[in-house]
Amino acid sequence: MSALYTLQAGDPWQRREVARALPRLAEIAPPLREQAVTAWASAWLSSTHSTLEEMPYSLQAPDYRLLDHTNEVADTGILLADYAWEHWGVALDQDTLLAALLLHDIDKALLYTRDGDAVVADRTRAGLPHGVLGAMLLKEASLPDRVVALVGTHTTTSPVRTEGPEAWVLHYADLFACDHAFGQAEGTVPFFQRV
Image (cartoon, rainbow, N blue to C red; front, side):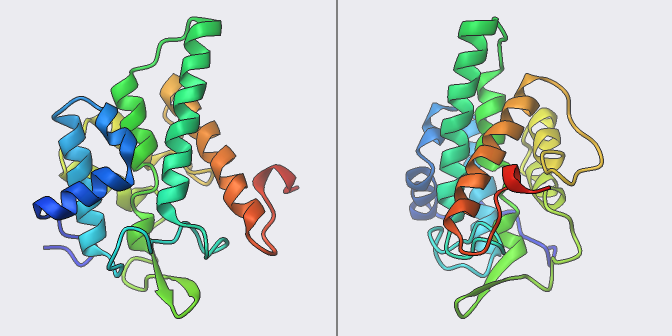
């Protein structure tokens, strides 16, 4: 057992809650879908959050929910993937892409906690860069190496980048949805406006 997280399937109600909160999980073929649900249940049950809905997206946008960001990234990523196929003939692995889109920020459930109205870094996990803890959890949950690599290297601060069209779509879908969240937060500058 790790102090960082515990891999756990969750009970049937918790698994249904994850599936309800992230409706595009239904578009992923089993057993990958079940592995993704287990990963989300593990992050939730290992976090300080009593519900999925109270998980914050970021320190800079404390009122923005992680679920909203995750669903926006998934929706945007599918639109980008469809465009890439229809207009450029670039085929993406839909299961890999959708799993990465839905799991890319899974570690934020563990990295951030609430202190009253504020969102703060969880002291137990604060030393780990975003993406790394998520990749660790996903690897232990037996997700494919490609999904693990995409999640582990998707951040703008990652020293390495995973190649391929799935990584490209994840990057732009994430930044697009991130800028939406930051645009909603008072005093936070979206990425596209940063110098």
